[in-house]
Image (cartoon, rainbow, N blue to C red; front, side, top):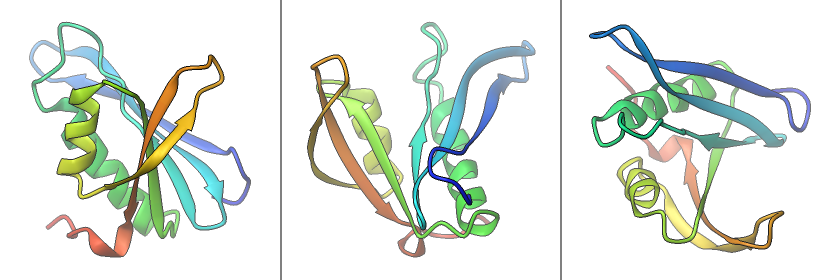
Length: 118
C-alpha cells in the first residue's frame, strides 16, 4: 500500500447459511508493514472463519501489497485472538496503549517466514 493508513477490508461470509460473519482488514503502517485485524461476530466465533480469512489476507499482503511484515494488536486478555496470532506464526513483541487507555498485546509476523498457500 502506498500511503500510511490506507486499508483493504473484506467481509467474511459463511456459505451455509449465506451470512456475513465478520471481516478482515489490512491497514498500511510503514512502507513495508501492514496491520491485520479479524473481527468475527459473536455466535460465529470458534468456527475457523478468522483463521481462514487471515491466512488469505496474509497471502494478499505478501503478493499484492509487497508487505514484508504484519502487526497484529488485540486487547490484553483476548485469548482467542492471541491464539489465532500464534497459529498464524506471529510472535509477541510487547504491549502498547490503546486510545481508550486499555492495553494492546502486540504481535509481529515477518511474511517471508510464513508458508505459502498451495
